[in-house]
Length: 317
Image (cartoon, rainbow, N blue to C red; front, side):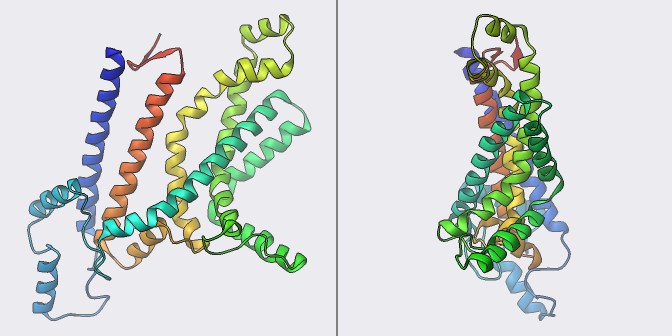
């Protein structure tokens, strides 16, 4: 128990340090952006520009701004969105649940379908099922999410509607079930391919182990061997990549949300970049970064708990 607590505390400390580094780097990069968020390409009188900078604290030195920014973040204050005057934390609170909903749907789909495809490909190695599963994985790895989204909109959203007269799949928005089918699929397809390939490789390795041969020799049928003995051990490498998959899904959501006109945080981030909205760019970057670091922390801890070969000391025994 003491080792477990020590390991968890160490991981938490490392995560907090990483978040602090992220905040500092993000803030400094904002200082290097060309232009300013006030003028929109038009010249303003010097007194007006000075007043705007004073209002948003941009008249202070860079170290003063940095320390003030860190202090504000500790209180949950990410600043004010410059073009519309809204609090960035309010925008995050309003838009992130939509992005989270989209991301969770995509992750669940990617994990379940990827694992199932990997199992089928490994168990049916060398058959048409193996070839089909790996063909889907190849498409998922090769086709970006924005291309997949556009194809789904065209064929399933537009052409299917023209052929049947029934709008089964909505091509924009995030309101009803019809609009919540295509975006998660487009977002998850690449991650599903990664999971299926990894699961297939892991399953093939596990199925060649001596204890699997022993289980077969005892008279267990294939279903028992696969689901009772093989899957539990083969799925461990998949669990380890769930943290990076969260990052892949959330960053991919930036594009998918814009393609499907979903009012999520990724859409606000893209808009803030085009309008040089410094506070929104920094706020969403820090928030997403902290969320991903937390996701990796949870995955690390869960992996140590579910794998009996690993003690929570960071070493295998």
